[in-house]
Amino acid sequence: MTFTPIIPVILCGGSGSRLWPLSRASYPKQYWSLDGQSKNTLLQQTQLRLNNLTGITNPLLICHEEHRFIVAEQMRQINVEPSAILLEPVGRNTGPAIAVAALQATKQNEDPFLLVLPADHVIKNTSRFLKVIEAGKEYAKNGRLITFGIVPTAPETGYGYIEASETFSTNELKGIAISRFIEKPDIETAQEFLANGRFTWNSGIFLFKASTIIQELERLSPELVSSCRDSLKQNVPDMNFLRLNKEAFASCPNLAIDVAVMEKTNLGTVLPLDAGWSDVGSWSALWKTGDKDNQGNILRGNVIAEESENCYLRSEQRLVVGVGVKDLIVVETDDAVLVTHRSYAQEVKKIVNKLESEGRIEGTSHRKIYRPWGNCTVVMDGSRWQVKRIEVKPGASLSLQMHHHRAEHWIVVKGTALVEIEGEKKLIGENQSTYIPLGHKHRLTNPGKMPMELIEVQSGAYLGEDDIVRFEDFYGRSDDYLKH
Image (cartoon, one colour):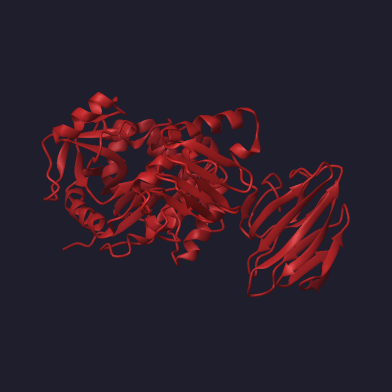
């Protein structure tokens, strides 16, 4: 029997704005651990649950270029080396993302299975999930395009639905031809779907041969696949990443794979999936699917709850105390606190839109910013000064750089720093400091085997992150790539 490998195609797009203030554009929900059962992030869990799948190979990941180092680092943490990390210069929905993945997977004239997975889902029953995937391989081998429909547990109005051509049974793993896709219904229609026995939720998880999806893309969305082919042909290798050509990729139609192919093809097949799935689409969804205490509460982090019921309380830093409250969601971060009734959780996205329209940085970015060399956190700031906490990974180095408008003081609080100022290098240990005058070329390196931490005090007439001239950089970043 011919062996066909399975390449996981993990889609890392999306901002998860309904999970603000934790999930933001600079660090969306797929890069957080949210379910409380694992320290691994949703992205890492997406990969790790495939470990026992027969024929699995290294994943192919697709993400926005701003998140490339986050993706690479999270894969490194679980000892996974991706076959490629494709960088989208602009967001163009799942159709183009899957198209470039399929084209990349067939570059060596191979024809693997592609298992397409959103990076931000929770699946509790891994063994059942893998069993359903295994069943889908037979259908995919015979040229079918498989989507995995979630067996509905309630008349949800927040999901799209898939109608099968006949009633399905969760007791048998049988693929059924798809009759149609339905957008998010009203509550009355959703109740009818739940009672019908032919409807499942649209999960966005797919399995097919690479050649099959390319063939259907070329037949049904030729402009899309042509633009994707050009963007991949003109890609620019960047360390372990592949940068898609911006002009070609931007010309792609902004289409979901459902619209580009699945709603039009006669090859669509749905397999029912009943494995404790959630797309973690809102704080109320996270509360609904999470493990609760005897009072129906989910408590995460530095939290105390007394005489409180059915709440989701989460603290990232400060103590959060709930006394005599019910049905609330409270999420604390270092620069924002969300308080809402669970029934209003879907409205959080409107707040994010409002913050963005007002130009408020809290809508898109955290105070803690992740970089390829580590991370930095704004601790305090004023009109002419700013204090940051900087953590540098072992062996990592910031760029050789210079500032026109600010000077910097560095105080090492953990580990050892190798500091270069105007070509002169020196080691600085814990409780030691150095000063970088305005206009001096400088670089910071961690020569040790443990993370190094320091406090940076900036002072000057202008402290914007665009005041940087970069001379050398190990990570291929240009001067306009934010800071350090």
